[in-house]
Length: 523
Ligand code: ADP
Image 1 (spheres, rainbow, N blue to C red):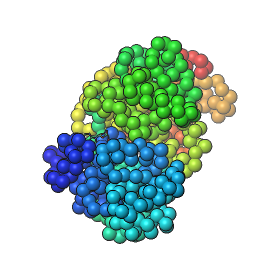
Image 2 (image 1 turned 90 degrees about the vertical axis):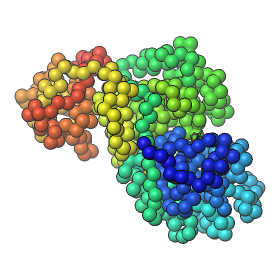
Image 3 (image 1 turned 135 degrees about the vertical axis):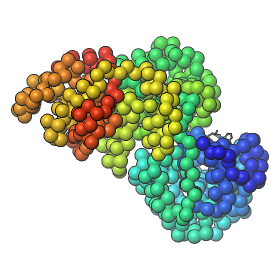
Image 4 (image 1 turned 45 degrees about the vertical axis):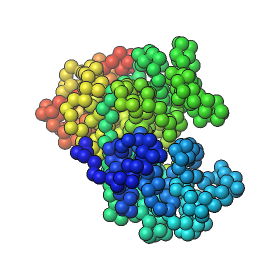
C-alpha cells in the first residue's frame, strides 16, 4: 500500500472535481497524473476498474494541446467519448464507422484548438496522413490504452500495436504513456521496450481485491452448480460467464425456466437485442446476465454481487478482469469458477484456429488451469501471477483458506505413488498414460508397451483415473512435477525427489463424487 500520495499539482485536483465531480484521486492515479504533467514517459499498471482513464484524461485537460489516445476497440470509443462529452469535455474519435463529414468536423475541431482528447485505433494513427496532420496540430502527449496488446508475451497481442514504436521517432519531444491491467513483469518490460519509452516512470497498482471471495470448483453437473450460486444471491445482480454462445443460450434458458430473471448476451445476437439486454442488466430490470467474454468491456456497474464462470476462462488476466466486475463498490462479493479438464481441451481447440502466438496463449491457459487445480490461496496465487507479493498468511476469502476444500488423507503416500510411476515411465509420457498405468488399465497400448509389467501398475486402481489426473495437476501446480514439451510429458522436479524421500508434503484434495464416478465409467 502507498504510505501517502505525493503532491499532485492542485490544478489536477481542481480539474478532477470540476469535470468529473470526484473529490480525490484513487491510489496511484495522482502519481500517474504527475508523470504525464512532467512530460515523463510512463507505464501505469492498474487492475480493471482501478481508474486508468482518469490518469490520462485529467492531464489532457490541464495541458495545452491535444492528447491522442490509442485504443484497440473501435466499439468502445464512442461510449468513452460520449461519457467525456457528458462531463463537458471536448473529445472525439476517428474511425472507419464515420462519414467523411464526421471526419472533417473532427479535423476542424483539432485545427481550431478546441479538441482536448482524440481517440483512435493504432492502424489509423499510423497512417502517414494522420501522422503529418498531428505533427502540425500540437500533440500534448500520447496515451496508449490496453498497452499489453503490443507484447506477444501477453494474452491479447495485436500486430497493429507494433507500429506504435515509431511514435517516439516521429514525435521526439512528445511523451508516450502506456496503460494496462496486465502486470506480469515480462509483459511490463516488453511494453516499455517495444514502445521505446525513455527513462519511464513505472507505476504498478495493487491487484488484490480483498472484498472478493474466490471459489474454484471442479465441475460436477455444471448447470446445477451455477443454479446453486444464483440461488444463494436471490434478487442480487450477477454475471454468469460461459465459454461458448451455445452454452450462454442453454444456461440462460435453464435459469429462466427456474424462475430467475436472466438474459443472454453474446456477439451472435443482433445488436439491438444485445444492447437491450445489457441495458436491462445495468438498469436493474433483470438480475442476471449470462454472457460470453464479449460482455463487460467498458461496463461500469458497481453493485454486481457475484460473478460465476460456468467454464474456465482462457487466462488469469481474463479471470482477473471478469471476476473483477464483482464488488466494484467495495462490498463483499463472491466469485465462483467451475472448471474441468475438458475446458482445457475446449480452449486448445478454439486457440488452434486463432492466428498468432499460440504458444503464449497455451501457456496462459495452463497457468489458469494450474491456479484452479492448485489448491493454494486464490488471492495469493492471483497477485503473485501479477508479480506482487501477498503479505497475509490466510486471506479468509477463498475456498482454500476457508478450508472448504476437503483434503486427501495421506497426501505424501499418494504423491509418492504417482511420482514413482512417473520415474518408471522415464519422462516419455503424459498424465493420461500415467493414470492408466496407475489404475491398471488393460488397454492394448499399455500392454504393448509392457507397462503392465511395471511395479506401479494398478497401484491406485481404487482411486480411479479422474482422481489421479486431478492430483497430477495439483502436483504440477505445486512444483513437484514438471510438465513439458508438445506432448506435455511428466518428469520430477527437485522438490519431486524430496517428496519421494518423504521430506516435503504436497497439498492434495480429496477425490470428490465426480472424480469417483468418472473413474468408474472410464474403465
Ligand atoms: P479502468 O480503465 O482502469 O478499468 P476506469 O477508468 O473505467 O477503469 O474507471 C473505473 C470507474 O472508476 C469509472 O466509473 C470511473 O469514473 C471511476 N473512477 C475513476 N477514478 C475515480 C476517482 N478518483 N474517484 C471516483 N471514481 C473514480
